[in-house]
Length: 400
Ligand SMILES: *Cc1c(COP(=O)(O)O)cnc(C)c1O
Image 1 (cartoon, rainbow, N blue to C red):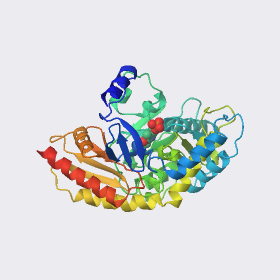
Image 2 (cartoon, rainbow, N blue to C red; image 1 turned 60 degrees about the vertical axis):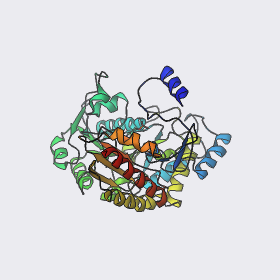
Image 3 (cartoon, rainbow, N blue to C red; image 1 turned 90 degrees about the vertical axis):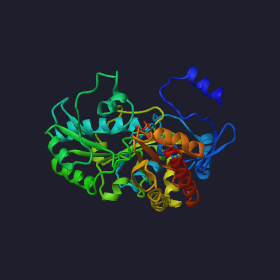
Image 4 (cartoon, rainbow, N blue to C red; image 1 turned 45 degrees about the vertical axis):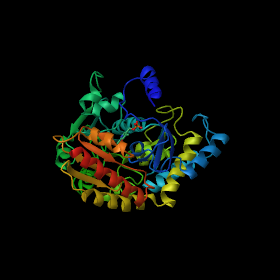
């Protein structure tokens, strides 16, 4: 495996620090390394592989559509983009959708939409619009998005950042209330902070934010790139609070594990602020993406992945709570979006992930202390039980 690692290290940028494992094949919930060892994938590419690897229905659509029509750019119509956008609007209860590729691009789109709306509809003075985000957020890696980040490493030596942003505490509706100014355009928030460490806000927080935003005439934007499409045991994480945002961002699982696809969805009043030429993307919404996105959404419904996420998530979290280990200081999660907090005095999350890998289970730490478990939503009870055994063994080995 070393030759592949060396080659990547020699010719690649060193902006990641992968676990020392070289993968060459994947199917369903499993991946294989170049030596033929099999691993259970318990992080599914940060939820991009919620359908499992190489889902047969989505794979079939890729093969058929790729041969028929893929990239023509939005200079022309294609015969399947409308159906994809319609489906996305219908399942999320939104009115319009704008397709992009990566999650960060869809977040950028939401910020641009919020600013346009502030000037054209709300009547904020030119160049004065403000956007509120939360401490500990993760919305991607582009410069505008990093302006919102409070993570020192993500921001270091990338300044200067954009004006017109302010941060508040996550999970505190009063903080939102007091941060709003007459020129505030929008509040953008993850319903559960993923990269931040699977941080779940108090019950009713999202509903209270929605009420505040409605009263104060500011847009509420949910970044559901990681929490959306069944990850938390509801189609959208905001369904737990029974609220609808003004703007919604999807990505990751929307690509069915096979293609980068993201969407910014909103009410018509907001989306109509974009006029031809105002915004775009060469690959965004291409025919291959549209076919895959439509199938990804259809498979989630027809294979009842949301239901499985809820049931398997409960089984998994109960199993974790049954593990008696002094290394665990907290277990939290919803559906199959679960964080295990490791006591930093006893071990690092990274060391847990490295040891778990030796027992055939792949996971990824977020920050120094949280091991994140977010397996494909198709996962079976047997696979979860195998993961639980490996986790228990790992923790007892690390306890020494
Ligand atoms: C992953 C993620 C993003 C960024 O998506 P990319 O496709 O990596 O650009 C944005 N927001 C959230 C909540 C994410 O989890």
